[in-house]
Structures are given as structure tokens and as C-alpha cells.
Length: 231
Image 1 (cartoon, rainbow, N blue to C red):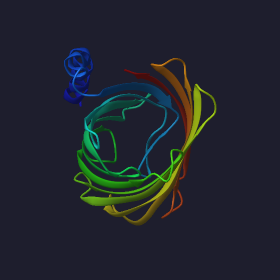
Image 2 (spheres, rainbow, N blue to C red):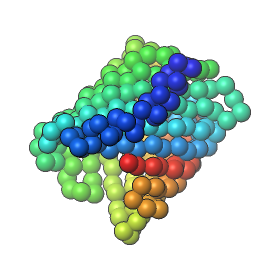
Image 3 (cartoon, rainbow, N blue to C red):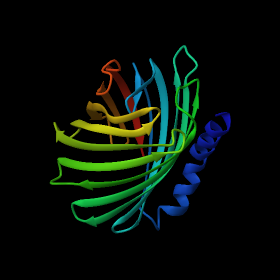
Image 4 (tube, rainbow, N blue to C red):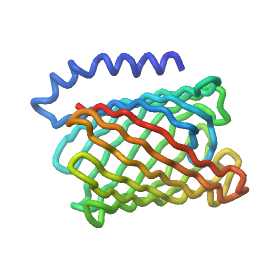
């Protein structure tokens, strides 16, 4: 875990020089996010209570319909031992104007968690009926659990002003031999309100939920706040 957090710190320090080398040739976007939340639910599993996390990611447009994304995050539970560090690499290919395919690989390392360290491979297909709506399906295989995770998810975004917008996402998931679970997993979602302080800074309070479909004893509702910096 210490090694992974060191890698993320090194990547943060290297961003200015990387951007200087690439920005004249390749469209490049970088985003850093830090925040706190009252609970942390991942794929229907309640992993922690009050949590602080830091995310860093970048997106590079390789050509008109091909985009490369990379990044990572580190999270730690306030007053307890749970930690999570992860790094990911993804490719998005626009099949047509309103349809995109995606492929991701990520490595997750946990401390004091019921989940195991491992590599997660995913594939997704997303349809955009218009600028406000999206609907997608994804499948993941996780080496930590030796199981499969499936999801169908939709999202809606509504501008409220020139500087603010509301977003709502929700979906349903299913699993197969995923940490001893099989079948329908949870109904989940998140509502958020983003206010752009200026062209680089924004604040996003959010409310999330996860309702377990198997045993019904893992329902969670949580809230939080993100502070985002974009370059």
C-alpha cells in the first residue's frame, strides 16, 4: 500500500512536465478530486464509515474517436484501519456519435478489508440518446474474488445555470461467485449537485445509496462532498 501511494504521489508531481510536453500535440485533460463521505459502499459491499479520499486522473484524446484514460486514488477511513489504493488504465472508442465501447484494467490494494487485492478487467457499452441521458452495460472479472460482476446503469444531467448542474445516476448489479455471492446484487445510485466556482475549481455535494437484493441486510445511504480541480 505504501508503494502504491508513493506511485500516485510521484505521478502528481510529474503532471506539470508531462502536460508541457504533450499539450501542443495531444488534447489533454487532468482532474484532481479530494473529498470526504459518511460511508463507502463498493459493488454492494459496505467497506467503511467516514472516509477521506484523493483521486487523480487524466484523459488524452489519441484521435477523433479514441480516448485514453489513466489515474488512481487512495482512500482511508477516519479513525479506523481500512485503506484502499488503486490505479487504472482505460480506453474509450466511439463506435458512432451516440454509442461508445470501453475497456478498463485496474489494480486494487486493500488494508483491513473483506476484499482481496487483485486486478479487475472490464468491458462496457454506453448509449447516449441525447446530451442529458446515457444508458450502459458493463461486465467485470476480478482476480481478487475470482468472480464476475455485471451492471446496467443509467444517468441524467440537468444544467441549473451557467455554473451549476444536477446529476442523477442509478443502476442494478448482479454477480457470479463474487465473494460468495451469486445472483442479483444491489440497486444503487447517486444524486449530486456541482457548482463551478471558476473554470478550474468546483464543489460537489452528493447523496448515494445501495440496497442489497439478496439478504436485504446491507442497505446503505451515505453523503459526502468532493472538491475538484481541473486542468
